[in-house]
Length: 136
Image 1: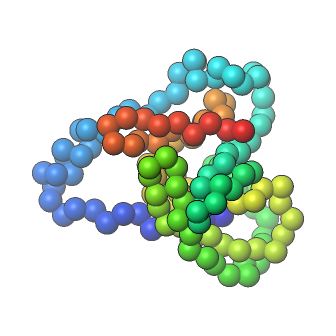
Image 2: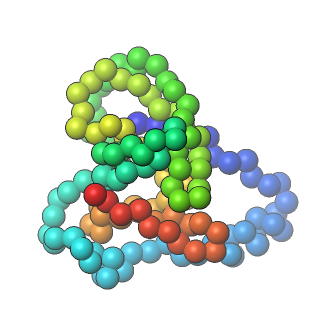
């Protein structure tokens, strides 16, 4: 699980309108399913660069299963995808999980990411283009 602080926004409404107009559209097409076996019920699991290390088995979680887990603490780490980097607060827990880390809505919002478990991909804006993060 993660908690992220979104980047500070510019107070100039003119520049906000200009920024919104230049963002590429994030969408998934039928061709984005290429390389997946359909139908499936697989989770979106990726490799992310966290704290300077390539971390495998990171679950891209779109919701929580409702289990109560007592946090042991938090740690701030930089998460990088391509050239995009955000700082996230990871909650540290003592619990069995097949995943090394879990990223959720705060990460989606901080990166501007949209995910699709059907396509086993996540897409995010990077400059004037759309980058993909493909599940493993």
